Length: 431
Image 1: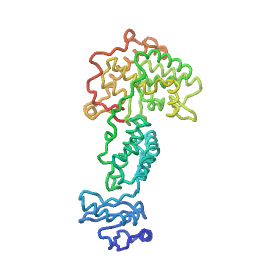
Image 2: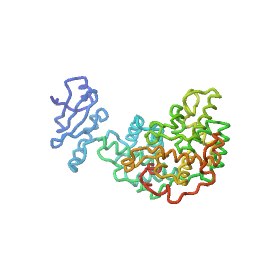
Image 3: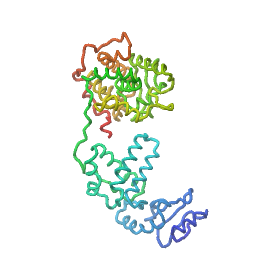
């Protein structure tokens, strides 16, 4: 039964305690309906236009006063555009929408803690402070350029400016898709409207000719501070990301099966990853475990911190600040490994699988195996090359055949460089 009432916030509060009051309408405003949900006092505003029910918004997010004030404009919009929505925006400014989206992201269990923290900081420190006071009707290219894009590019890298812009686009799009705003103020506005400069990948700061000196440095670090040296060595040997490496557990390592398993929750791509362990790395791991037990540690972490936890992101960053001395970063080790594989003639697809880049859909459709044996052969070739540069001194394993002892990192012609390079999605292209 539909009750006839005079809509007001006081009336809705009074009716919230009346179980017989479910669906209501106001004869002064034809087509406007309010329905309580099971979670009283929450409810939904709707407008019936040509027998079609159109959602306006939720109560109490949208008060009766706000809905009645917006009703004439809503009717006019629907009359002018049959495809328009009846949504009434619950926010007065862009900043309120951004605060809603920041809270929404913080409760998304599928996002990593790092991504949540980055988004929260970008929204609070850059978007809300610069354009948070804008009304939705004030959002256009000129205003965004003056208040946001051009000031940001003066102080921040273009890559980070693009990330901030992408958050603004995503927030407005999500609100529009959910029917929380009648129009998307960012529709049709692109990053290229503000800058035509191409964002280039950062140049590698470690090159093949530096491998021998690097290994000498890491050998010294392994002796003085084993965890620091081991973290860098595992990344150099496998091309893993620093986050994937620092969170490794001994239970992820099987010396018997010669495999390092990285669970999906630890990877950037959210896809589990497995890496073959060569004889050299198995020897290195055994030596490192002995070093841990010698100082009384028998816990689960390869890289333990205090209070029984693993190494944090900040602690790992400090490790590479000390190792790199501003000359190189953890990511440069990953780049060095990937470049080394290509220069040794390792197949491009195998290299991408080892580096754990997201696979393109065309590759996923045809590759039904992780080709573990080819991955193992690739890492054996790479570690043999590292042995020739001093890696053998660190792991201490004798009798490993060194196939690369007489060869430098010279590129193999027509191998590992050009085939199916568009079959995978690199980290730069995903930014």
